[in-house]
Length: 70
Image (cartoon, rainbow, N blue to C red; front, side, top):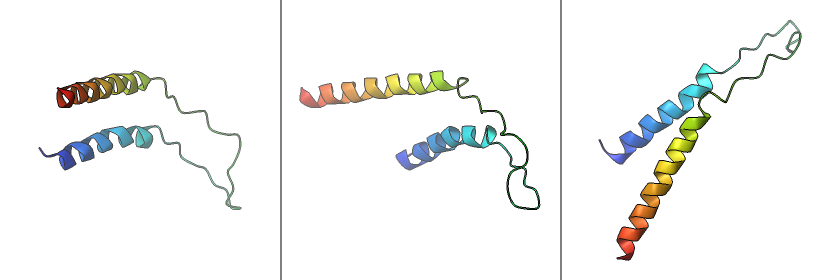
């Protein structure tokens, strides 16, 4: 699997969250939203994944820089 496929796979799984938590709009005849605002979408369910991927990314970058140095 080349890097393009890996990037597209990562992008797919990253952006699928936005589709899952997207909120539908209700429009009336005047093309403005009806009623109150919809409830906020939860973001705390997958925040830990951002931290895990961040730590893995930093580890790989530090490892790569240290190998190139020596």
